[in-house]
View (cartoon, rainbow, N blue to C red):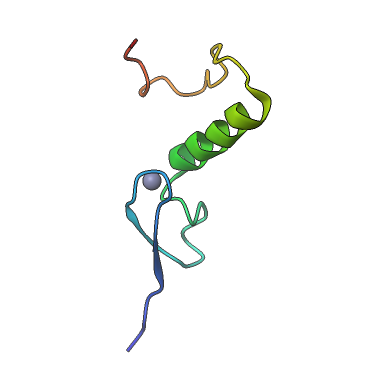
Length: 64
Ligand SMILES: [Zn+2]
């Protein structure tokens, strides 16, 4: 009889259960949180992407 509150991750749209275990809510994971923060930071300050997210190495590896 437990009702779960869910939200959709603003970055990827994945369903996220809103509870204490979802530490990155409303994002599904830290990656989506960083992507979202990076997007508004880029819009605010217009920082050219210059290897700022050096922690991640398994995404955005495709040169456009
Ligand atoms: Zn996500």
